[in-house]
Image 1 (cartoon, rainbow over the protein chains, first blue to last red):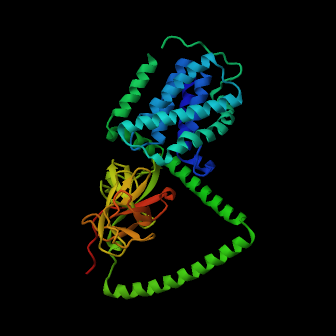
Image 2: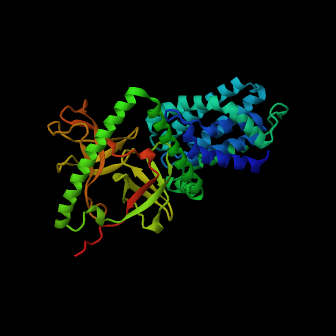
Image 3: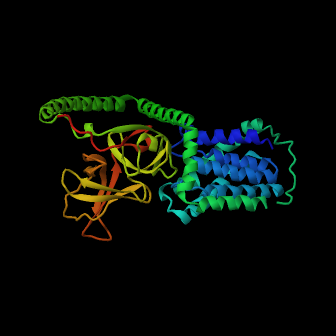
Amino acid sequence: MRWLRFAVLALVATILQTSLVGIISFRDIRPDLLVILLVFFAVSIDPRDAIVASFAIGFAADLSNPVRDLMGPQIISFGVFGTLLSDVHSVISIQRITHQAVTIFVIGALTALLSHLLTFFRAEPAAAHFAAQLLWQPLYSAILGPILFFPIAWWMRIDRKGRKRRRPGRR
Amino acid sequence: MLFTWCLLGGLICLFAPPSLTSKLQLAYTYAFSWPLQAGRSVSLTAGTLSALRDTNSAGGEAATTEQQRLKNQIANLEAQLQEGRQEIERLGQIRAESQLSRMTFLLADVSLTSRTQDILFINRGKKDGVAAGQYVLGDMSIIGVIASVWPKQATVKLINGEGSKMPVTIGESDLARVMEGKIGNVAKIPNISTSYPVSIGTKVYARKVPGLLDAPIIAGRVTQCRTDPENPSQLDITVEPACDITGLTSVAVIVSVPKPSKP
């Protein structure tokens, strides 16, 4: 795993998510670049690295999309579902574009749901944006995600077709 | 094991005091303030251009009618402006300065909006004279108060954000109440009797607060006014901010009590 390239990519995605992604928003619905990154790394790298990458992307998500000054809901939800997806991918291959899109949609919805529930521990989240985060944002990310996988794979120097995954070992 | 440690780190962040964790968010907005502000400006410009393109493409007759209506509106506004100028001249003879012009404002750029759109991060802090509780203006209307302050950063709790409370007066009257932010970024004014004449469009002003706000300034407009279903003797009043907060790139913090007027 090329961690320096990962750090640059995560940082650029975080800044874009906070600022420029509004350009491609449709009716105030924006794709979640960090969920796309999460799915990419969960299905593309070693499971042990995928755990670290998932929690790191969750940390970036909490930095860029703060919910009432809180940190943690997205670290946990991204970390849990990124790790879970990495484990599932050891058994079921997610290579087709349609499968990738469905995976992004499901993971996007699940991470939004879990972070919403976790936010309840500390503060009441705004219900107004919940439907958008649970349904429309993951849907938009699912449409955009598989296209973005190609430049991300090129930047990370990951040959997605020729890659051989290692079975998950000891954690 | 690695997963457990990472999860533990996440839980520590979740249950740590927000005053500590928000420092990380402020550090992020401070470190990347330039790309964030540039991106936000580009994004807002693109949104404006897109809206203009939509208006142009609506085409034909509808566009011509709309243009005419806008021209009429501009003409009406010009007439009103002229009348206003004359009135200001007359008032100027009575009083040297308006209350608003005597206050000290500090301009600040908006570096980030929270996902729940109830908090703004601005690039001014303690070192610039910003303190908790100070009022914040956006497009010449009150949009919120300073919630937390760090040396070079601060957060603004918006008037419609959940938990926000602001003393206000309704319309031109002296009826003083506290406007409260509710879940879903909605501002409500409770405890108003149905006998009180409030209608949609009534202006809501932030009330004078000694040391913080020396003159009432518009904060919002009533967008919904109906009988409270839970208490039929009272009104359920919903208020919308007087400006589009999501489109703001800069705000002004009222940093001090009014300057003494010239003799």
